[in-house]
Length: 238
Image (cartoon, rainbow, N blue to C red):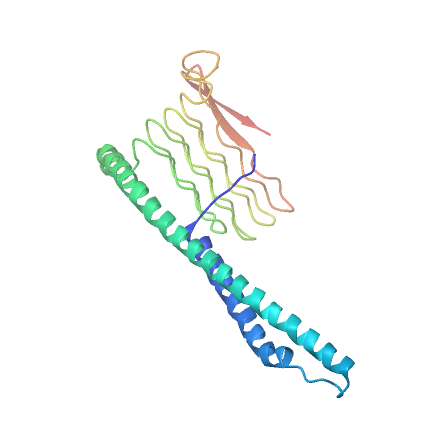
């Protein structure tokens, strides 16, 4: 099955490009009108006159076809413009109330936890910005994956992955710069993918922590992942 997307900005840009193409073709046809439809005979003999008449008739037929094509082109551009505007309006009508409602409900749920612990109750942690070495944000206390640590320019350490919530997975550590170690992986959730809702070893099996970030060119990265199994932390290094 083909993958099709439609965005108002892309439709508007396509309509603008087609308008410019139509204007260019119209200008070229107008410039060629007088030179091609009124050809003079090369001589006064009947053959030259017939040849000039034939080329002039062909040019007039071309201008008629070009006029019809220009009308079709203008109608297509108009339809494309209207379709983009209608799609944008429908998208705004359908998305805005649902997004606003979702954001309001999530904000109301997370407000107490955010105020007390500076960490939401639900939601994934934000990823560290690339090139900054910023640590990934922690996921929600109840449900949420930790954000991935940000990569860093040469000479710095990659950011650590964020910790997961009760259900979730720790974020991956960011890649370190040249010659330095990558960031440590985030802590795995206490009941993540292999826990209470997954196919783990028991009701309290935890999800694995995020992978450590890739090290620099002359130093091995820190490959740390924390896992919780049987409600006890274990640490693997490799």
